[in-house]
Length: 228
Image (cartoon, rainbow, N blue to C red; front, side):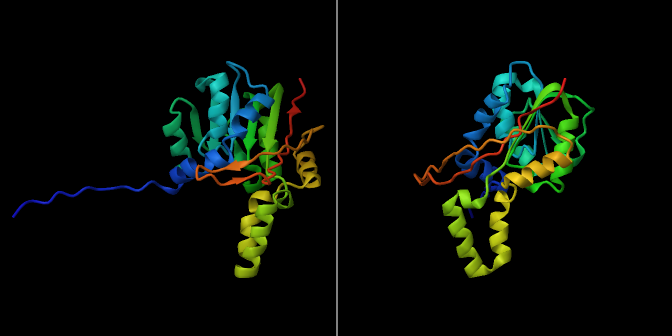
């Protein structure tokens, strides 16, 4: 009887699927834009808080150099994907509310689409401000309110009618930090003076050809320049 050989196939995990299928369409455009707007420079130290699979940290490292960039997140699987993509960036497991760095450790602190998921937005912002060097720049991006993305707003209503408010609210979660008054409040509570809030528009594009021009992920920025 001929012998049979077996081949073990390990399907990609959720974090890798997310990085390959969703990150380019949803977030890829914003990393280089935020790094440029934060004025990241060659050889400047930079921290990405809530880095996920590392799209923003990698964009900053393209300018500053991998050795000068650190990314933190609380999802080990996301960090592993980030480490596979850019092994020479310093990837660390840490919550935004308790960053494992001394005061004034980084010239630039960035966070892209993570603030809305922090356990404490105020504490997370306060920690980012604490580790920022005097004269440094803090820039945080979040999705605007769901009403700025009509396609998502309609889908949320469909989910509400089909499955109830809990499912619909979970879908709306990424848009939960987009209110300008709320942003000003949490920034003030974090002790960050004189924030500047701007709104920008982006477009979701998937490889399938699906495009959503009305996806107004208008971003709110806090280019709070730390007083020297």
